[in-house]
Length: 183
Length: 255
Image 1 (tube, rainbow over the protein chains, first blue to last red):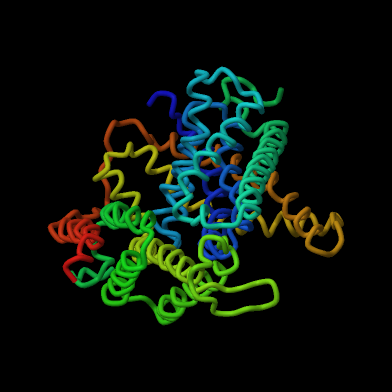
Image 2 (tube, rainbow over the protein chains, first blue to last red; image 1 turned 90 degrees about the vertical axis):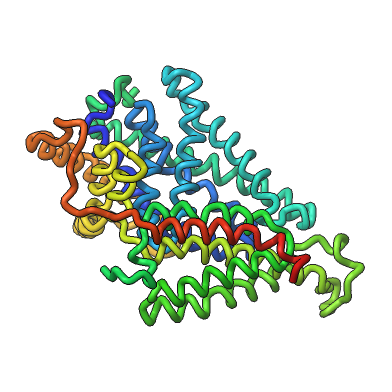
């Protein structure tokens, strides 16, 4: 509780609010296209990583991804995206956070973000098999689904890291991150 | 806020968010037509009777799910592997492409599944106020109130973002930051707003946190609330009903 300073909480609230606003249209679009055009859905699935990547890369504190995604989920729940939003958001935030937890928050290199993103999407694709009826698709569609899912994940993590780098260069999180992000 | 027992708005927000989750899982993992159809109808009826939607939301509720199901049914005719369903009847032949009835059934099941999960999610989504949800999470889920107040702050940040975005947009235009026309240029322009918007928001967050601490925020382990969100017997009934609904798939043999 001591580490949850008010400044850190408000920084998470700022990133979480931005993520929530970004994800409201994403939830609407994903509901309509998730099964109608599974390939288009795979191409946009990486957008969920933008918020937690920015939060972790800028704030560099334990819990930043989970907290930011919880707050983003609270923003989303007031919209008709409903409770599935908070569960989805927390799942993504926690998945990214796990990688930093097991390395005891000592490694902040970009590769760890990418590895956790890919691991989560692999797990997600397997768990979503039944929901999206992936095993009934043609082989070409299946291959396309995985390639697009992977590509969008890596692309959005890259975008998140670039934004985080620029924010750190602007000096906004100075004093929050124990290890300076502007390195 | 209506306090009638027939209005979903009078129920506890945390219960409304958590109680449909088992039903959503059952509906999401089902492979038949019967289960998701029943869940979709239950969700829709609950929303129509107790949700009291406004005219526009009502129109979306009535038109949206059938449209979604129809769209998915047709599109899945295209996505499904023909080798799996070519023992069913061919509905339509268009050159090399054949639309099998089996593919349509698969699509119908997927559409009903998505519609069911969406309607169950809307039970909370359409009838819950964000601030009441946070209050209830602090009171009933024992979430630390400091995190809850970060949630309140995040909600208040949203209208501020809209104003900030407008200011940044105008500032860019004054300085002639213009990538040209077309979707790519628009995308590039919007990505140029992301960093100043976030930097401004985080600086605002710093100021808010100073103002909060100056007023003694977080000085005590607990905090009393002016507005109280009740947790009543009716919430237990709602939760029991939504859990009981999960046993619907096992009724196929009876009916």
